[in-house]
Amino acid sequence: MHIRLIAVGDRQPSWVNDAFKTYAERFPRQWKFRIDKIAAARRSKNNPPSNAIQAEGEQILAKIDALERAVLLDERGMHLTSQELAMNLSDWQAGGRNLCFIIGGPDGVSAGCRERSDFVWSMSKLTLPHGLARILFAEQLFRAWSLLTGHPYHRG
Image 1 (spheres, rainbow, N blue to C red):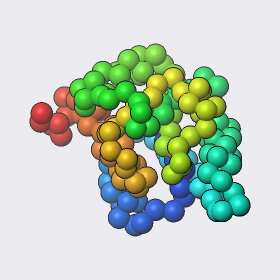
Image 2 (tube, rainbow, N blue to C red; image 1 turned 60 degrees about the horizontal axis):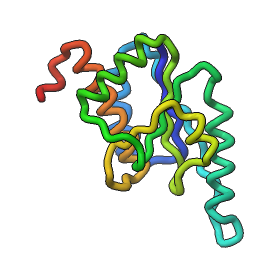
Image 3 (spheres, one colour; image 1 turned 60 degrees about the vertical axis):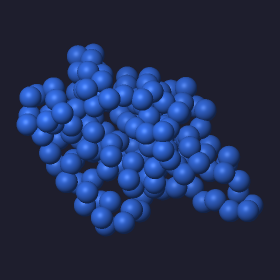
Image 4 (cartoon, helix red, strand yellow; image 1 turned 180 degrees about the horizontal axis):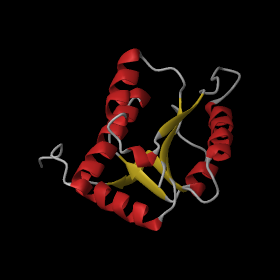
């Protein structure tokens, strides 16, 4: 199973990139993890957020393979403990499909993206800045892997 992240927002502060990379480099090689970045659509007085959401959604959907399991990260999704995430990851791995996580733009994702998602996961009830969401995603994915493999990283 290969894992990747599709994330709207192609420019992040260096501290975000550094922290994300710290965890992503720890992922198992067989995941062949990668991040696919999509530029955020322009938002202005003459271009309402709904247009940006639609444009970003089309780009996201174009990047998802037909057989891939898509997991949308959204504050309105299902709340999981680290152990529950690990169990889901185990189930997803057993299913044999490649796995793609999605972080939408600042105004959310299109209805099409939500419909295409096989699972909607909320990392927090808080609204997180996108850079912080990326870091938290990478850390929790690494933690889930560490739980499944008995790695000492998770000591909970």
